[in-house]
Image 1 (cartoon, helix red, strand yellow):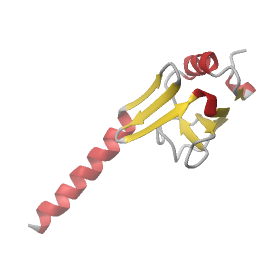
Image 2 (cartoon, one colour):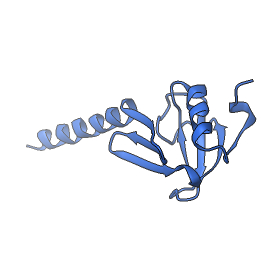
Image 3 (cartoon, one colour):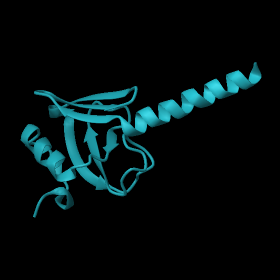
Image 4 (cartoon, helix red, strand yellow):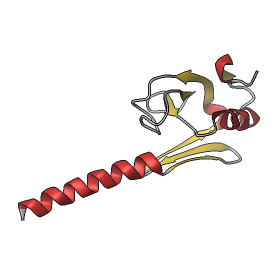
Length: 113
């Protein structure tokens, strides 16, 4: 019986890690950016986004260890003040974000030259 409990906990934990790591979506809606990684979700209103910068802190955020260069989005309503993401197509993401957030300060290293 103890072995069943241990394997059940292990299976659930591994499943949660896989779900959170590999099933990530960044969706641009009309008035907000929606981020989803497994059971974790963030809805960020465009007017709340203040600044976007590049970060090398890959140990936290919505794509743990998948990229050495992530993007940190600072916004007014965040529990921690920012969220770190690493979209597969970073330039396409930044271009789309600029369309929705023309007021946002975007670090020069993230813009297309």
